[in-house]
Length: 470
Image: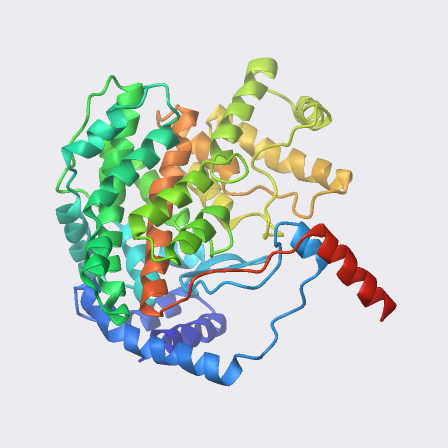
């Protein structure tokens, strides 16, 4: 069965079901007993290659919309111009991973413990195949990723060549670039591999990269904040649990938080800066290491992944000035003070979403379950009530609701990961799963070099004059 047809059936079936438990039973019939992810892809890819050819031949001239001058001048907002199979972002529903919402993923994907958070390996399987994996498949993938998690000494030496004071994202991206020396895709391309086989070395690079980035990221953390005392991987732990362990956090709740964090941050369709950058660079047949390193440099920007750092720093500035027991009226005054100084309230608003980010909601649910009395969580809850009405009153914000960054820092801070400058690295580790999954499919489907057309202001003015005259 085509996994796309399967997902189409899944969507309609989920919509018809009155309870998610019925959907769970149906989805279980869609899984395969094959424990090898590569074999599943090898079976699925030819079918999807033919599907893409059919879409191009039968519907290639269908118009998807009109481009306006506002879109050209506004960062290409709202333009439909990119194929991204692994996830889809709806302005009202939020993110869906291969058709599944975050609550559905929490219910359907295998967990490390009963009623626990989904294992990131399960999401990786889902993104690559469109199928909900069994626990046995996820365990096999966990073992495979652990076997790939080897780190050459020169990667550590490349990071060590930087000042310890360098931003964690700079050190992280440097480590990823050092890993590129081992690229299987680059070696295969230099030997003359046929383009129909590009996806296979891309798969090898991608799984190696996904397996190794937690080692790079944890090394950076321990180097900067823990006197360089590196913690080796635990071969009994899963991907999220191991990442928490190598950072130095072994509490079961922190490991659960890391599983949730990596899962929900992994992918957010293809238009965001990091995902689009990875796709753009990859379209030049740059290998996954080069593509992902470029994506990390986009993620490091204050308007993208660095926002999770800015949120916690801003919340702590509120506490420093007003105390933990701040009233809603005091909080309103502080929000207005921030806005009137020409700054934004970090963690609110989104380029696509027009409602509260479901990734915020699931983190809030985690906090309500595990840390309801934490003062910073209570402050975040007050902000949820105070900020949206103020932003609505301003009249300049299409989405006044909190996004994913509004909550993650408070959870991490509660469990002891208090270093806000490091938070974007966590985001980067997570995003490797989504970017690499799509890159494998970019190669499998033979997607072309990305090359949009650009114009000048003279061109725009002349075009608009002619259009007005006509």
